[in-house]
Length: 164
Image (cartoon, rainbow, N blue to C red; front, side):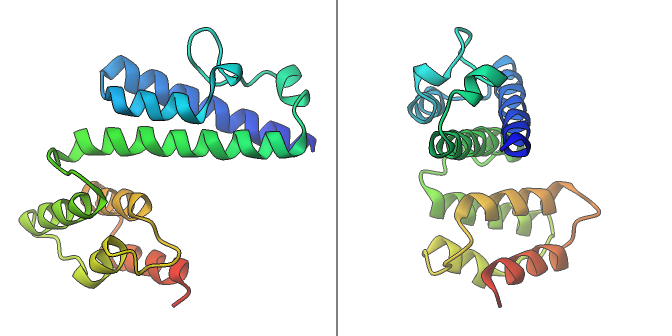
């Protein structure tokens, strides 16, 4: 349990740092704040609005509560990553997950970067059992911005995740 506790503390601290940076940069919408406070209710927040990461607090939680807290922290961090992703790649106007993926696909094409439309379609239509739109969007963004991360890397990740 001690190793899990340390890992969860690091996870919470990483979330708190990401939240502070996004908040300072003004990259979070009101909707994102609402989603985050729904996930991490006020009992698990500090007065400053960050996730509680103290050893005493975490030790007071049952193993189930600890895992639930860890899961909620990860979901909240995903919200922050998605919000900052939208501002980084200028995909304003994406109303839902489908339009987000297709706008990113179009942005990649406009940049001259090829991408497999079948992968986008599979995830956008919900045909993928293991890859969600957030994780694909993050991989597409990495492909877009990281010169050392290519299309073959994205395809390898997708195939491994899907179990193909």
